[in-house]
Each structure stands twice: as structure tokens, then as C-alpha cells.
Length: 94
Image (tube, rainbow, N blue to C red; front, side):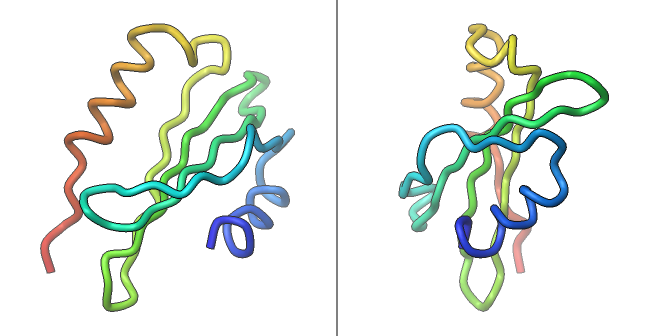
């Protein structure tokens, strides 16, 4: 999904798009998921985005994205914000 559907759109729409590393399989809230990270430039600022895609079933899925200035990515507050976001996100009930 990431490689075939999402990444080509990012390459076209994100100024300065550059993937960081590979696309990684993972599990999120008991579901199969995939993570991907990339750089882009937004309003002259280099940013780094973490994306996690996962399917809920019935053709529904989510693509969670968390973006921060690239220079701040490894700051403890940024890392904690991402962990909190991933831990507390809940998809809407059907």
C-alpha cells in the first residue's frame, strides 16, 4: 500500500520529498501496519514526517501522520509527543 499507492502521491505533492530508510512492517492496536518516514519542505522549513498505515477491515483504513521540524525530530519532547499520539489514538467506532 505505502510503496504502490502513497509514495507516488508524496513524490508528486511534497516539495523536496525524500524517504528515510525502508518501509517497515509492524503491528498497531492488534492490526497489521506499516511505518514510513520522509523529509519534505513546508514553507521553507525542512520537516520530517512519520506515517503509519493500517487497515480496520471492511475496506476502511487509516494513515496516521505526525510531522515536526526535522531539526527537532530527536528532541525528547518530540519523541514523547509521537509516543503519546500513537498510544492514545482510537479510530471512530462504526
